[in-house]
Length: 315
Length: 261
Image: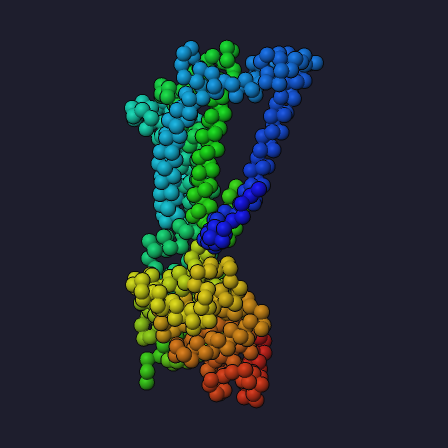
């Protein structure tokens, strides 16, 4: 039987209830969304394994956790164990050593993820600052915008794979060079959205600042930048994932083998002997990208919490 | 004689001057506004009454003629922050609390934090928004937002308040209440007000003088004196003097509608 709470304890509880403050984010929609994500993942997994059930290689009871022996009625190339490894094989790959007597693959991928994440974060900040600076510059000097914008756009049409080796050779700076490559992918959306956001205030708001004889500097920091923040955060969320892609691609020609790019390159060459390792590396990359995205989203929610619709912008 | 708060001398405003589609918005405007007056500008839509207000605020410049505020060129007056302005929309910054919105002009002028806080709280009392310091604009009704924007305009204790159809977007009941409040604020602060409106009732209730303008090109047709005792209140709208002025203004407006230069 449960002991009856003494009055003091009951009071203590009341105290904690009173001290409880509503959290910044409403929890219920968040939970609903999490549930939705899980359901979606389960559905995807079912489709994945369903495809292998219909057209994969024969299921052997000793290799699958369900202990099922099954001979799929069809032989589809996409569903073969080489092209589409079983999910449990991919999961198991995290625990198995990548090479004989080495640490488990999960450990290697975790370290690689951190390494790549560092490059991505530094690139994100470099690119974000450059993008913001260019946006502010273009917003104030129309001539510069007209003159430079075509080159900024052109810079984004050059494949990153062509730029990356040059940057590596020019800078000779190891992982910093990779961060610069990540920044190259990052700055563009920030420039475009900063420019757009800085021009978003109501003309009356600009006139209001003018009526108070506000300097351009004051108008920038007290009106234009705050008004641009929702636009800038939209760009930063794009940039967060782009910077991870940039970091991974930047590692390829740089000879850096400590990051996810190196891991992907490595497991790519041994795909025939162990496809699940490459899949594991892909999953790790996705986690870094998603994690970074969520981090930026969290900062966005915190920064924009006082605005209307702030809760709706979480996605 | 005291220096007039506003003096317009032979002011013309032509938009797209010199191009084939040029528009004469204002023509030969002469206007003198004495200290402490409440002047309404009324006229058919598109007659340039807002343009007139924006000229006084140095938000646009006249094509010819001169605009003086407190005996200085309008530009100098703007740079000295000699006036406060209220637009048709409240134009509050959504990322600032009501208190911070009201403090904006004081921040730009470099007032100390204590000064800003004290002044903003006084103003919230004046516009009856005490208790809403920490609210954000979007949490307030349209009328309350406009009250906050009036408080912001008054923050720097301007001798001149420019108001461009400030209650145009409000419903009739709210508008009448706001008229009452504005009347009281005007009496308490002794500010000179230049008020653009298209509502005859509003103009008559609030003003000491009503400037009736003609349709484009905007010219001053008539300046109607409003001899209704101050302070005005609930009963003012039922007095004979009120109806007489209203009839007179309406008559001039009729002529203004039909009038073409």
